[in-house]
Amino acid sequence: MTTRRVSILELEGLALNGFIDDVKLIDCYVNKNVRYSKLKVRLSNGEIVETSCDHYARISRVYLVLIKYKDLGRTIVRRELSEEMMSGITYDLDLGGNDYDTRR
Image (tube, rainbow, N blue to C red; front, side, top):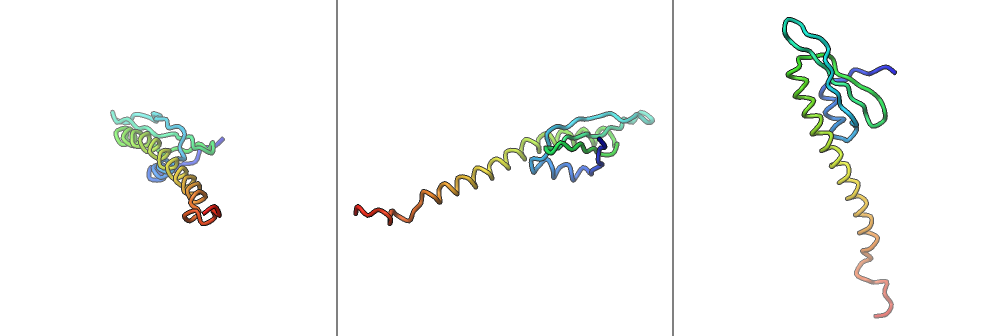
């Protein structure tokens, strides 16, 4: 399976929308005492994507942000789904002040 290259901004968007399952920080190489790393991410559809190699200091900060966004994205998606479900239930129960009740 080949991995697709994506930008950091695209990964942040995927995380906020709840599409990231797993994030790994992988070392690429060291050049003149500068460490380079990349992120390898498994999406909810099973696809593997990765960033290009960049300075470890930058990639490690992005890694931490993605972890937080991943949790936040799942919360946002769950809240929207439950609000949609609850609005349907509320609509079904709100029958306009019991106009249908013939016992009055």
